[in-house]
Image 1 (cartoon, one colour):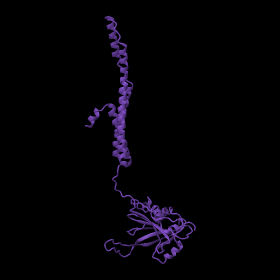
Image 2 (image 1 turned 180 degrees about the vertical axis):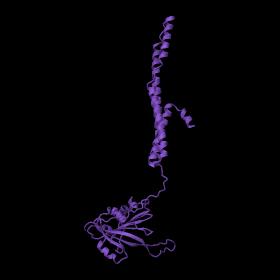
Image 3 (image 1 turned 90 degrees about the horizontal axis):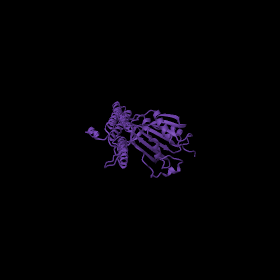
Image 4 (image 1 turned 90 degrees about the vertical axis):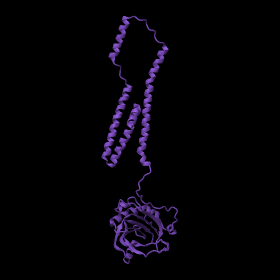
Length: 349
């Protein structure tokens, strides 16, 4: 049915139509074959392009024939002239009266104007066909980019906005403190899952809060942020107190910290240690009671001084998982290197 309808179309409509459709489909299939490494699509695309090249060649030949029409056969013309000459020689005839000048003048221009009008119409049809089907081809090409996507792939969690949250008073009294929102943006990097060794995962939650350190009556700023994945959870916090890293290491000897390692990190005093997290169960039923606080999985923490001279305060990066598995210390150091580059050092007081 489609072939019958195409045969009914004039040449200068049908051929541009086939060229437009063939070129759009051929280029599209070649693009998909390169992107998806599909040899079948590449073969079909080549067929369409070859078909289009053949149609272009036929249109070029037709255009050349229209511009340079071939002369009439010379033998037939000469025979007609000889016959007319012999007839005039043998049988005298009266001199024919020339047609009126008006008739000749009218016939000449009419004949001369007929061909250009026909050629103009053919070109107009061709241009219109190419424009229409070129537009349709562009819509088919660009349509998937602007159409609503049915992809149900979960999107990474983003940091919640805290534009209208009022900072505690201690943040105004602390020189250049970082906020929980800034920590969240520094931690929630697009490559964080890759740094953790789980590149296929996306962040399920991301948050930042402007807290104060416990047991300080709100006098020490301690912002923190946390980003969770299916495998690991990462927490980063900054504590603006007067406790130096050296003093903190001495206090660890009286705590439950394990596998303690002191080091220099980015030119600052730092310490690596392990400790258990706390597991709290909340019952949101009618009773509203929660279970006892239990020991959670082991976590690995890197604590880095807020400045090179260790005048007090630290930035802590902690990683843990529900399964209890931990990444290597090199992974934790890589994460800390990326995050700390966006946290300003503590200024000289």
